[in-house]
Image 1 (tube, helix red, strand yellow):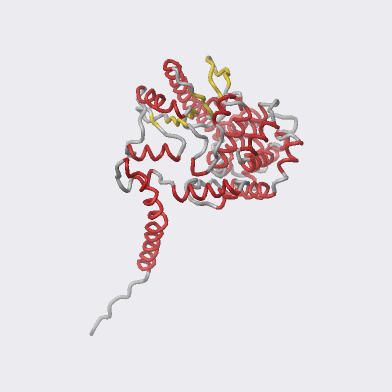
Image 2 (cartoon, helix red, strand yellow):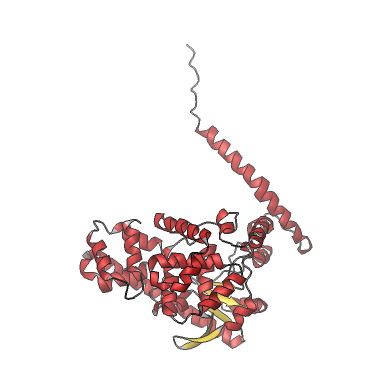
Length: 403
C-alpha cells in the first residue's frame, strides 16, 4: 500500500475503539509533500471527510497554506451540498403533492445516515428509486419543475435507455442539479434481477432533516451499496468508505436476512467483495460470523485483492455495458453469467439506436444493428485506424535530387 493511500484510509475510518489517531499522526510526520495525498483524496472523492478529519485532529501538523486551502474547499463543498439538499427537498415536495412515492438513496440521505453529517460526503447528483409504474408520472413532475433530458437524446434513444439502463438522468434549467430516477438498481444487461416488490415492501419512513422520507431498509441499503460499487468495479475509495461508515451506523443489521437475499438473488459474491473491501479499512465493521461466510468463496477473495490493488494504483472507470471478464467473475451462478453475456451482446443501447432511425414497429431490428456495429463495423474501424496510424508514423523518404 502506498503511503498516500494508507494515510487516506486511516483518516477516513469511522470513530471506533480500534481507530488510532496516533497511527495517522505518525504517517503525517513522515510526509515531505502534501500534494500527492491531497490529490488522492480529491481523486477518490473523499476530500470533505479527509479535510474535516485533518482539521479536527491534526490541524497543528498542517502547513498554513494547506490549512487555509482546506477550509476554502470545505466551504465550497458545503455550499454545493446544501444546494443539492435543497433541490432534493423541492423534488420531494413536488412528489408528495402529486402522490408519487419515491425513495431517495445515496446523495445527502446516505451522508446523513452513514456520517451523521451531510457535509462529510461528496455527492454530485440526486438518486431516486421509483416504481416502474410511477416512472412516467415522476418524469412529468420533473418536467414541470424544469428538468430536461440531455438534448442530444432522441425519443427512440430514451426508449432504448428505458429498456436497459434502469435509470434516466435529467438536468435542472441552470444545469447545476442532475436527478437520476431509478426503477432498477443496476442495468438490465448485468442480469442483476432483484425482487423489487420485496424491496418496496420493506421501504420504511425515516426522518431526514425537517421531514419524513421513504428510504430503503438497512439491509437493502447495504445491498445497494455493494451493487453500485460492483457494477462500477469499485473505482473510487469513497464507495468503500460509504459502506464502512454505513455498516458502523447500523449495529442492529439483520445479517442472516441480508445473506439469504443476496444468495437468492445471485449477488452473494457482490456482497462478499464489498464486505472484504470494507474490512480492509475497518476489520470490526464485519461481524465474526459473517467473516466465516465471506471466506467460503475463494473467487470473492481473489477479486477483492485485485480491486484493492487497483484502488491503490489509481482511479479507473470501466464501461459496464461492454463485455468484461470481471462482470462474469463477480457472479456466482452460471445462469446469471450466461444472461449477462447474452444481454450485453444483444441489447441495443442509445448509441446504436442513434445510428438508424427506425419506426416503432421495426425496433426489434436494433439488436441486429448492435451486433453488426459492435462485432464487425467497430473492430474494422479500429483496425483501419491502427493501420492508418502506423502508415502515418513511417518516416518519409525525401526524393532524390538529380544533378
